[in-house]
Length: 297
Length: 243
Image 1 (cartoon, each protein chain N blue to C red):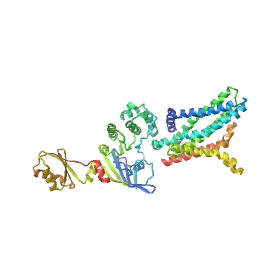
Image 2: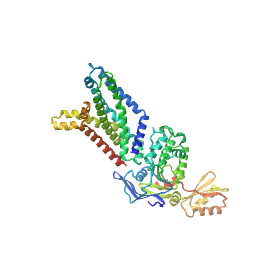
Image 3: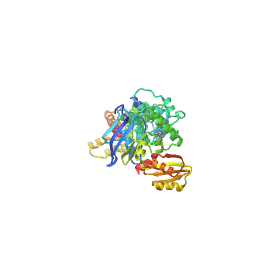
Image 4: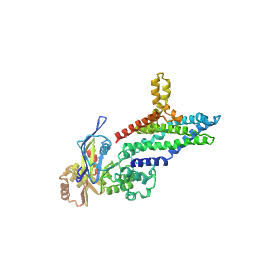
């Protein structure tokens, strides 16, 4: 792949059969050269198969499969590949030595500091919590400086504190390299990803940055407003006039309509016409989990 | 070579920092020591020939049989654990070649075997205090046992690679080793001399005999190395397919 290309990986029409069953039916996928790219899909959608294809762990067919041959890929499966009876520093040194292709020495202290493993560096891996094990596995991947890191469900089993720490670490790493994350935890994906791909029934049905996918797929507009002088009768009258729905949440009214283009303007006019004093009014963006539900159900 | 050393060091570090190998050593020493003691107390007259025929030969022969049971258990974790913890992919995706991965595991098993089998050197050393001095026979017999262990370990490592769990690995390995062991008895029951000799050549039993007499025969070595090469090559090819 061209070194100046915006994409590190470019795949077109990726197909894979398992015992006659077509698991991947023509996947198109672009992974940017920096940042975090989320990979979403329901169970059985083919996410793990795509990841195995990226790692060339299985055979596949494709019209285009562009990955720089010098690109180092780091992979972290959901079941962390750890040698539990080794100490943290021994494990990191081992992984570095079998992956490193040059005579460069591993700066173990720097790596341990970056991944916040100082207090456990001499402990055997079996004695660590799930969160620390996750960090050790991630540190091992980082030790040989891959250009692309593939993570399968990195947040599973972590407590909220560790999830936050892992997210911060991934955001830090993504400044210099590309991370490809597969996860079911959509809130975490929405927080850290610059772009996402949604895999459904063996095909990528959406690929791009979250905002553009959301606006493209948004089938309804949601507006949240707070008034000084609203009554339910007035609001009901407005909704009848504009053919929209509303619900009340504390002191706020949430309006919902399928008329994406004109609803916002029409609603503002209606508020004025009815003499409502608006304290606040904003459009509520569709969340990634809502979006995911809409496109995969 | 450097990568092989790294993997081998990791394997040995894991094995010798765990308790499994020492439990093995204790059980092996207890059983082989018991056999040696039993043979020794039934000895009437202490002569070199008597010691060889009535103490060391039966003890070493029983140790060979014991290794058929021990080796599948010793080697079962070689690849099964790697698959279970998904570290096999970690190795396959690294700069290690399939040959490195197989040899790292196999050589580690050979070193563990050396560690365990070397304890039977104690028996002739004890006998040396009573004037036993046929060291040529002792060295060749123990070398023969170690060569047999090398075959068992190679089969065990192969079985660990093709099995999904440790029990399956033990069962397959034991079935293969035991089949080759009883071929010797099967050969004796066949009337046709040529077929009987061919079957006998394939059995394990016939290939320890010359070692037990203090001689190293080239056809025994060819048999042993062929066996090891076959299972090593097959295992490496399986790893290549998994890559």
